[in-house]
Picture 1 (cartoon, rainbow, N blue to C red):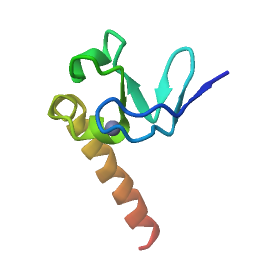
Picture 2 (cartoon, rainbow, N blue to C red; picture 1 turned 90 degrees about the horizontal axis):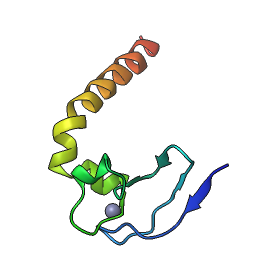
Picture 3 (cartoon, rainbow, N blue to C red; picture 1 turned 60 degrees about the vertical axis):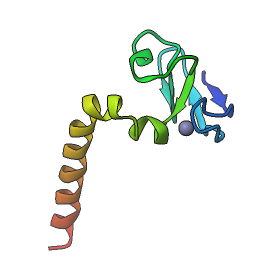
Length: 82
Ligand SMILES: [Zn+2]
């Protein structure tokens, strides 16, 4: 079971196209949770993917990991065309 989320992002106020299950969220971050709170500003409960990826606090923790996975994905794609 999942619940569709259409409420606006608390940071950019654009509608969020995402959903949540009992354990996780997609398309946004539940920054009212204890863990994601560290990347949120005061009073923010939902932050969309796009905003989170431009947050220096988030990029400092997850930026390098994601950059690495993009490089790996690019390498795989390049192999298919050789
Ligand atoms: Zn946003």
